[in-house]
Length: 325
Ligand code: SD4
Image (cartoon, rainbow, N blue to C red; front, side, top):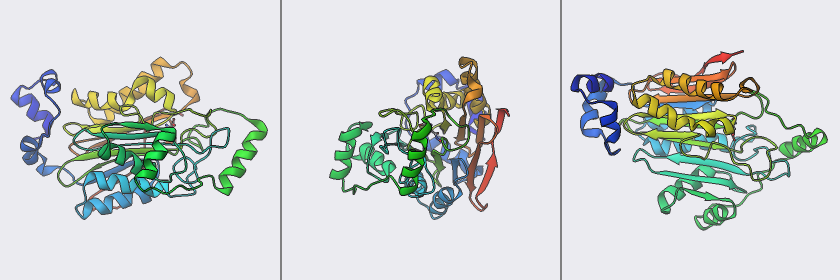
């Protein structure tokens, strides 16, 4: 019996469920999960290598938490990806500043913002989650913490990204280019063999942003949210719009109320569209995964895709449905 049917049949209402503290639902869900497609990994954009990495770990029995971290690290290390990790585009003053977060099935979370000179911010975020009583560390403090934890400093501004920044300085045009260089953040969700979900999101943010700007990606509830009883969501695109609607949290709450991942993503995008008269000028895209292993995705503009892995299937890149051309 699927969870939603279980809720209907037993007469447990959404309100009653949401009033229940978010503790592990294993005793009830373990047997209900028997027909579900586990494990699953899904990521924003066409990040098939990252998704493959997470998928192959999950297939070998790794936890969702380890798999999601190692999965997104593939893109953090990819010098060709100019909006994540090493090789990420700098801000308008030439600083490469990284934002990342991670969430584990027990609802714990860690995040770093405005982190310089560390190639794998997601791993620093995991250390924040596991080694401190805090959720978020910023800037110089985050860097000091990373060094204390054994991370090595590195110059993240590659020759190519420095050259592109120098060229940008000639015109200094600051506007989002939909689906092009401003949008390659990786957000990933993994569901492991135990039916536990974890998520991560990592980015260098908008290219040539104002020094100090932080987007949605490291904000729990905006770029990433999950609840191990319900599922998870990740966002990409114009972070300001995602933050204003607390998009990933919204999607998880909509799924809690019974919406499918697809319906929940559509409603979250429509909230932004209704609130922002200039929605045609920017992209917002979400991917959601519920505890049954169902994936949904929706975005404002054509062009967003997501990579998915299911056990026994090859990794795939799928175009998301969209509102507008
Ligand atoms: C941000 N949401 O910093 C990120 C940008 C992004 O693909 O998604 N890029 O606003």
